[in-house]
Image (cartoon, rainbow, N blue to C red; front, side):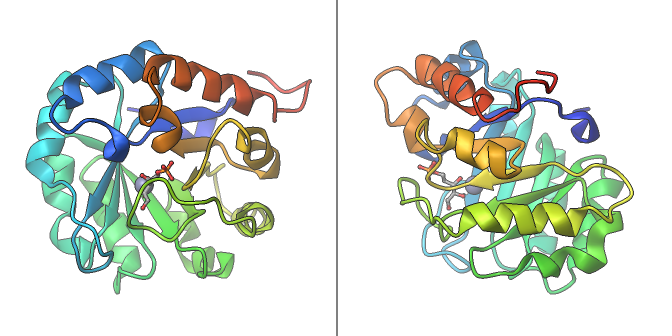
Amino acid sequence: MIDLARVTRPLIAPSILSADFSALGRDVAAVERGGADLIHVDVMDGHFVPNITIGPLVARSLHRVAARPLDVHLMISEPDRYIDAFVQSGAAMVSVHVEAAVHLQRCLERIRTLGAKAGVVLNPSTPASALADVLDDLDFVLVMSVNPGFAGQRFIPHSLPKLQRVRDALAAAPVPIPIEIDGGIDATNAADVVRAGADILVAGQAIFGTADPEAATASLRAAALAGRPAASPV
Ligand code: DX5
Ligand code: ZN
């Protein structure tokens, strides 16, 4: 079980949304060789977001071949209906959008009851204050730095000050809660987002959109480490 309360260096979570869907096992193995900490799985339903991607059956197959924990990002309406299926398919982390989960606290409790880590996702226009009443129910927060639905979008600059606001909102939590950032992350902004408070960096195009996803994973980690204060443990 991944210990999210003890994250001491930036974690890299390649998003398979930009991988070759006919060769997911090969692509996952490549980023794992490059040092990926998590495998980010983007689940879209064509309703909450315009795109449609993958379901629990694909997650189950990935779980069989992946050495790293699956980080499942649910961009779906009524996420309550699919939490069990994704955890049973091997998800170690499951995150649900504030904007999609009518019964957010119940979703988080269910994810934890099933033995996975529970995350809350904030769209770019959703304020950090949305976290205030679920601080006891959270294992991580995912800050969207693009509007969800597609890989390869441009990083929204407003995400940097927002990371700090999320960090402040989490200060009242009973345990340290890591912040994941997702959308438009690459080697040019990795240090900035780490400096602003991100602990887990998701990247799709910046990794699988290159000729060498293994090397791109390692490069992104190196870029992220540059955002750590010199004295901090890595
Ligand atoms: C966006 C997804 C992201 C996306 C990231 O809706 O949640 O995980 O795949 O892709 P890039 O890094 O290309 O923005
Ligand atoms: Zn995602």
